[in-house]
Length: 180
Image 1: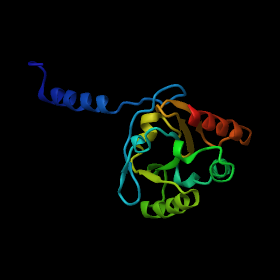
Image 2 (image 1 turned 180 degrees about the vertical axis):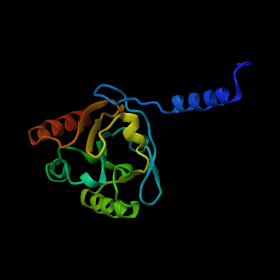
Image 3 (image 1 turned 90 degrees about the vertical axis):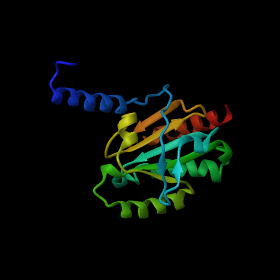
């Protein structure tokens, strides 16, 4: 490197750290989900370890598509609260809002998210820079549903609207995973 001009050396010093930190893991069924940390509206940080030992249903959502899988989420809520086939002590469903994929201002996104959190008795977190979308290669401008087992292995991933015909299959998967 002794004979390289200073601008070339500076370019190497910039490019190498960027390529190391911008790793994409492309989450797929059967792969282990990489850890993350996001905050809720009260600036409380959460990670997957916050719900250690639980099956996770992560709804990673563009705020403009927040109602896309309400039918599915209503069935999950019924399976927990009415049918009692998904035990709360072994399962946690929550949302992560992909704020970067919406034109809406963050304060408005937090208001809408608060209503969803109340309706589904859950936690909503905020990804302001699309970190998880990039890291896991999730769909932009969409609604992603990821099911992770207790060991954080991806067991199902849906990008977009979940077909009605698959709702019961996913519920059955969650029930099975909570018993493992």
